[in-house]
Structure formats: C-alpha cells, structure tokens
Image (cartoon, rainbow, N blue to C red; front, side, top):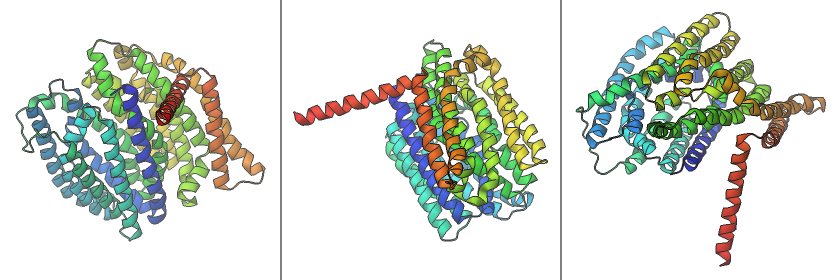
Length: 489
C-alpha cells in the first residue's frame, strides 16, 4: 500500500470517528451534568496509567520487529493478557481509596466498569497492532468507525435512560466487545490462542522503554484532569475537558492518521539509511498549514462554537479553549518529534524527554491550579513552549534540524492562518454590527469565511499543501473520465 493511500484511509477513519464522537458529545452534554462528565473524565485519566503499563510497548514492538515469529506473537499476547488482568484487579482494589481521595463515590463505580473493559481489551490488541504493521488501514478504518458508532449509540441510549456516569462506562465496554469480535476475523489462522512467555526478554527489552515514554506522555496529557480533580473539583475537570476535547479535534482528525502511518514508514526509511530531515520539515509544513488556520479560527470563534455545540452553561470553557489553541499553535510543528526519534530506535532519548516534559507540566499546572482555572489554561501555553525546547537536542542529533529553522520553514503557513483569522472576525465582529449576533449565524458565517479565505491564501502562497490538493483534484477528475469512458464503451 502506498504512503499516500495509507494516510488517506487513516485520515478518513479519524475523520469518521471524530465526527461520530462529536455528535455523541453534543447529546451527552445535554443529557449528563458537568459533574457526571467530570467523574468519567477523571476515571479515564486514572485508567490510562495501568492501560499503558499493561501494554508493555507491545504495539510498537509488533510494528518494528523485523523477525516477527509465531512464538513472539504468543509472547506478546501472553504479556498483554497477564498484565491486563493483574491491573484490572488492582484497579478494582484501588477504587475505594480513589473515591475517598477525590471525595466522590461515583469514581468507584466507574473504575469497576473500566476494570471490566480492561479485561476484554487484550483479546484484540495483538491482531489490531499486526494489522497496522501490515498497513491494513482499510480494514482498520471499518473497525474503528464501527466501534465509534457502537460507543455513541450505547452512551446516548443509556444516558437517556438515566444511567448517568455509568452510561459512558457501559458504552466503552460495548465498543471493546465489538472491536474484539470483528478484529478476530483478521487474526491469522496459524496463530494460537494459547499464550506464551518464551520470548519475554526480547519483547520487553524494547517495550519497557516505549511503555515508560508512553506513560509519561499520557500523564502529560492527563495531568490537568488529575490536578484539577483534587485541587478544584469535578466541575473544573469537566470545563477543562470540554475545552480540551474541542482542541483535540485536530489531533484526532489529522494527528491520529499521521501517527498511525508515520512509525512503520519512517522506521523503514531509517533502516534503509535514508535521512529523515526532509520528512520532518515536510511534516511540519503540512501540519502547520492545516493546524494554524484551524486553531486560529477556533480561538476567535470559541464562544459561539461552545454555545452552539454544548449550550451556554459551558461558557466558562471559552477562555480555556482560547489558551489551549495558542498552546497548540506554538507546539504544532514539533508534534511528530517522538515518532521521528522512535523511528531511529532511540527509545532511551524518547523516554528521557517525555519524563522531563511531564515534570515541567506537573510543576506548572499544579502551581496554577491553586490560583484559578484560567491560570491552568495559561500554564498550558508555558508548557507547550517548554516542550519545544525539550526536544531541541534530540531533533538536532537524529533529524539534523534546529528550532528556528523549523519555524522559518513554516512561514508559508502564516498566510492561511491569517485568512482563517480574518474570516473568523467577519463572523464575530461583522455579524453583530449587522444585527445578526445569533450564535448559529456568527459560527456559520465565521466558519465558512475562515475556510474560504484560508484556502484561497494557501493556494496562492506557494504552500506544499496546494500541490497536494491539486494532485488530489486531478486524480479524482481522471478517475471520473475513466469511469465515464468505460460506461460509453
């Protein structure tokens, strides 16, 4: 499968699942209270730690292993199965102290459901990772979209029936059962369901460092939920989570596709002795060309976006979203740094950088949490800039690029970002002046104007994305001509 086709399928998959999740969140925001959503967010933040530990880096190991024997597959399955069940038991045992620590009894109940889900997950993990290794992104797309539909339907149905926070837990379990059931169809027939531990040393020698880095990266992202849950309470967790959820739309749509394809592709190039410098700069140009306009428009249109999607009861999330968008603009060209360093096999540097980034983020956000929720949002801007500095040495060593050089290469992305900003201002400033200050009108006009102006400037600024768009349009036209010619014959 070509890189362009693989990315296209992964992109469609992430778009589909993100759209489904967004529609679901709109209904859930009206069916569940901020406190109920906050409890689930906190539970997910807690379960993420054992989720990463139980994986042992098996997913990355399966993608990178040159000689993937049946015995190594059995060992990977055995390690994931054993660790999942152990951590599920620990999670249940810790549910009582966690509920007491956060002074919220519902935390215990949601942790029980998440532990049950953890016991089911390993039966599909190895096969799903193997599908990524084989670049079976078409099949993965169908599974991911299907599981997103199951998750959303169950969550909304249970919430409507009055299950409260637990509706999200049962939805996750239903989603996992669906994924495991469908993934089993793609499991090679020669694979045994009997777990093994004969190749434990080989699997864990690489996986341990990857797991450590993944855990640090996860805690980096979940630290705000954990800190706010303890210092300020569940409503602050929900407000921050709602703002972060909108900011992560770009990550789910674009970054999910990039990370799914990047590691196998970059690892192959590095093993062939090809420099990754050009790929890093190209990735930065593409990401900034898409992301800078998106985050610029979202920051300006934050208030009507939140009101239209979730209602005016979430207005306090507006300044949080604006700060998170600025933080994203600063760090965006470097979001693929870990993928490039891992592709060279340097899991040690990746682990060190993630630990340093986590330490900085926890220190900044913990201090800010005692001031206010808005201070926490401002703290994310500081930690984003610090994250760029942390990866500086590794990128110079492995990719041969410097920070200033990267930002200089992104200069053509400023044009579509400016267009998006002007378009958003047309909605936010122009519509109220015309007496059309309704949130739907402001968001609709501002959104359309942002897309139109950013695309116009992108196509005329010599941005590399313009060439990709023209190539895609030309390809579609050629296919239509071909199909039309076939019908005439």
